Image 1 (cartoon, helix red, strand yellow):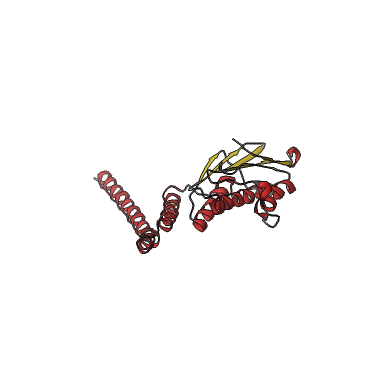
Image 2 (cartoon, rainbow, N blue to C red):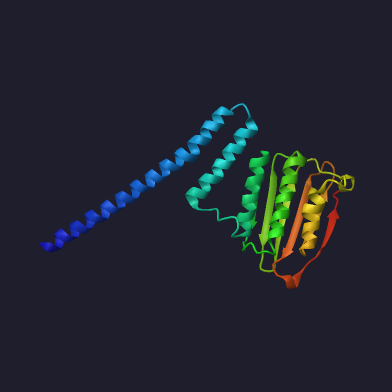
Length: 219
């Protein structure tokens, strides 16, 4: 007699606990929808005539939902991939140009690799501000010995020799920064052919690959 009663009691308690968990999850989801999604939809309605603003708001909300639902985004100071995604999100929100990031492998953001992330961010900013491209693409490959980042756009391109001396974005924030920290920066661009910035940094001080080169694609 006691056995079946205990079995039913345990079952009832399990069901009650599961119902409590589901109720809590629904409450958390409702709160998040109210705090984030509904406010974004209200902003989209307010700026419905501004297509770029609407697209920026929608992409920001997409990132937030992905992070919240799937836990895809680690804190930006924990890995190269998360740091690049955080930088891309800042550039996207600030300039209204979509920045797509694809990473192969990952690793911690060490003091040695932080300049690489900062240079990549500056390359994204330059592409978003000056290229005229509708999208910026970022590809990163993190290996044991080296991390490479490519920032590409299909915009108007430029002649690096004609860049004024007071324009320090490419020269100081990308090229010289990578050289100072033992990395490499290669820029391939030409008017009308878009721009590709390749950044490379070894993961250890014993395997520096210093130097900087500029490649022009004249085709």
